[in-house]
Image 1 (cartoon, one colour):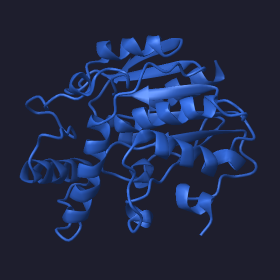
Image 2 (cartoon, rainbow, N blue to C red; image 1 turned 135 degrees about the vertical axis):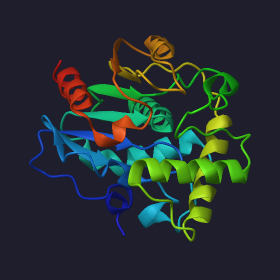
Image 3 (cartoon, rainbow, N blue to C red; image 1 turned 180 degrees about the vertical axis):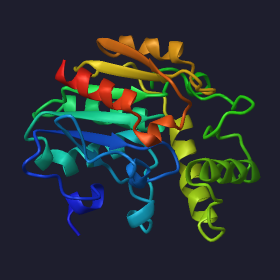
Image 4 (spheres, rainbow, N blue to C red; image 1 turned 45 degrees about the horizontal axis):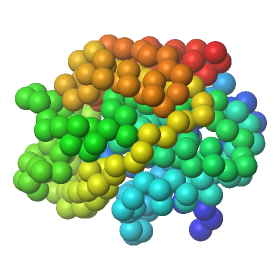
Length: 253
């Protein structure tokens, strides 16, 4: 199996004008972008698949962000031949930042923009970056949560997103990946690292986990255009028109 097959659900089109590499939040795989269109303006949507989930379930998940960033940069090298941007949501934003800063250290085409959604900056201390879920928050996890608490929240997200509980046979796998991701996130304490490209921050008006105002600190990593869109932490899954407009407009800008 080729590197590109491992990392991308489908081969990028050679006809694409530009590409948007998308990274998911903790505990899930690239299929969370299944409701997104194939293109947003000139950008072909290219979800990245991390090991340890979905079609890569048999491979060990990453234990640290630098290893992920180095491998992902290698895997994407052949697809950086035209303008591109990187999008991440929650943990995906931290993955996206790690990837962008890794690419900055290489002699490759640099991204036009980094899009970060519902995420505090990676250089904040972990105990400030991740907080216990507020009452009513959906899709928010913390390393101190028990397996039962995580299972309850995974089931609640499954009902919210898909209308049904996650199949019982799949729950242990989901919890294993989620626990690994949480440990990786909470153990990550990098220094401030500039992106070298403009940043679009996307906060959500009803996000009970990351208040949009806290995303303003991303300006320490690069020039920021800040947006607050209607919805909660999981609204991005639907690729609402407001989000697509932000992505297209800021990329073109």
